[in-house]
Length: 331
Image 1: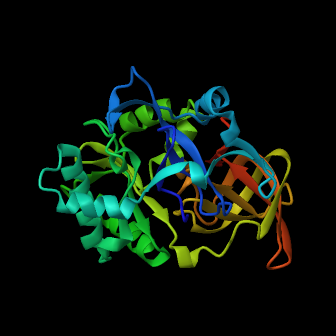
Image 2: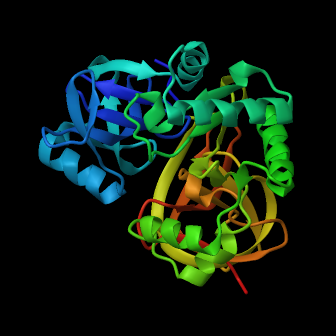
């Protein structure tokens, strides 16, 4: 089973999971609970009521209590992860197929109409094919409400860069339906994210206010996720051995931000006060966090990586797994 960032799966227990990352064991998929069956839930899927869980701590807590066998130590990543055995997966939801279904639908709801308009503008503005676009998030599983976010996905490096440029243009156009967050909108976003990522409000505003992958579209929150195509993913499970070597706070200069728009995102750094050459996150909230030449202060897990294919060893800082993890621009 090929699963990647942005896909969603449902297991034999009816739990709906977000697939995380691009590299998975051959017999399992790394994924975290997103919607869990709950008789008091306010959303329904195939006659089952669901509640949404978001903070990573709550996701792990739910599994520890109900399905502890999904929480495993992965020796390749030297990390305790949530991994779903392929035989337990009932269905894998494909964002590209879902968007195609929405385009063919004769009676889309109001949020789907808005999501379709958004993807049409991205397609036209970037001049990319429809099969380079998908729809993730709650819309993918039809568990959305009228107040849900719109979560489009763009596939392929060239397509992603075209869409990023198109978004920059669209956000500058007068009367554009795309709007960057106001300070008030950023306060709402901060209140939501600070449950999971501890950072000061002014530091948060400084990084988030200039991002183009997120904002409001016709009054609805959106986040565009950029994911590499299968033939652009040059790592298979086990090619790289990861080792946890501690936790650190670093100060460094961004040397290469060319991978900052993708999920997972990556920043090459130099001049760090630790032997660290890159900062990485599997969470979309850390995309577009800093630009070339900027000095950042970041805190997270330090990993040593041994690339068995290239016979290369280096260190990186992984952020986003714990609430104290952060990355801010120095001012």
